Length: 160
Image 1 (cartoon, rainbow, N blue to C red):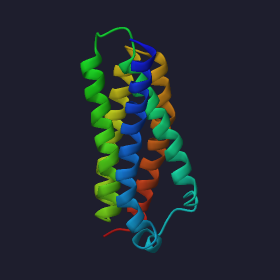
Image 2 (image 1 turned 180 degrees about the vertical axis):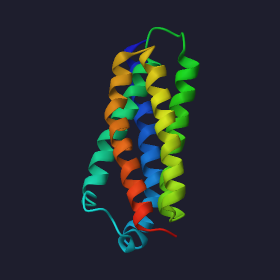
Image 3 (image 1 turned 135 degrees about the vertical axis):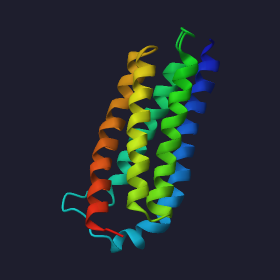
């Protein structure tokens, strides 16, 4: 693979990741200033300013992890790696829709639990091809686990 091809794949990988971030944020923006502020939140809920900063860093790492899989010299196992990546990215996107757009902490909780499972599978698949690609997803997994607990607490504090 030439340097130009690698650069093209880098742009593609980051763009795909940022596209999902942008699309999900469209569901989030409409509710953060309205519905979300009406919820009872746990005391350990981070300030609103933290979320876009953390997610921007994580989406960069997600895009880079895909890049390292695409440009890996081995072709073995890439099909399942791409499938696992697509699934976790899909459930990442649909969490914003289910929690914020549908304004449903329970739908969000179900979605994020599926996301955790898909992300663990993704890390396992990536690890078979590129240790670096898998490691880049670990902070994302840790954040999603934290978000899962937060989502659970919000659901508990706001029964519907």
